[in-house]
Amino acid sequence: MQEDLLVTKNLTPGESVYGEKRISVGSTTAPKDGETEAPSSTEYRVWNPFRSKLAAGILGGVDNIYMGPGSKVLYLGAASGTSVSHVADIVGPEGTVFAVEFSHRSGRDLINMATHRTNANCIDSTAAPEAVFAQEVNKLREMGIKPKEQLTLEPFERDHAMVVGVYQRSQ
Image (cartoon, rainbow, N blue to C red; front, side, top):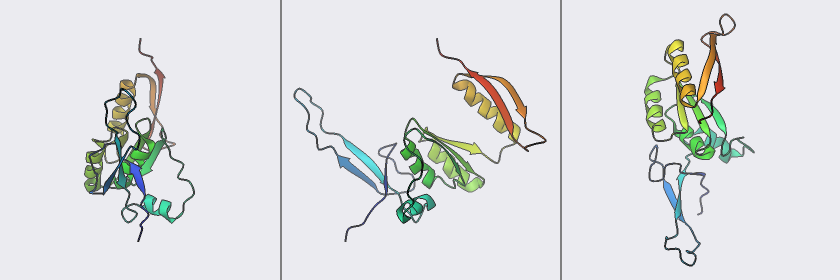
């Protein structure tokens, strides 16, 4: 009996996130004249639909998940990061996944997963809003964006802020 598997190309080859099966597929191309490198392999992670609603939806027939390499994704209800890790694989190193989880216990697992996947960013929904604002402004600065204005959106939106900044190119 042949089984269909849903897999994502592993962003961190050699590592699993939740004990999932990994599959390596070797290159079938031989080295060209003068090349000494052996053919390389690509590692994929099996995405378990019994541990991920997104995987279940894909295998159930969803036509398009509207995520691809380079996408920016906000993932609400990230739990321990099982699905987030696969979404991080999908969007690749040029993409970003912003993951939000309210549970402290699951949040710890999520943060641990994100330490190995640099394109997965955890947003701490349990921290005071002011602390989150300061943390995000620091991230903007690290990316070369100079904040010009910051204001809270009270009374229109509770616990939200807007930051206006200017990107400064490196000289």
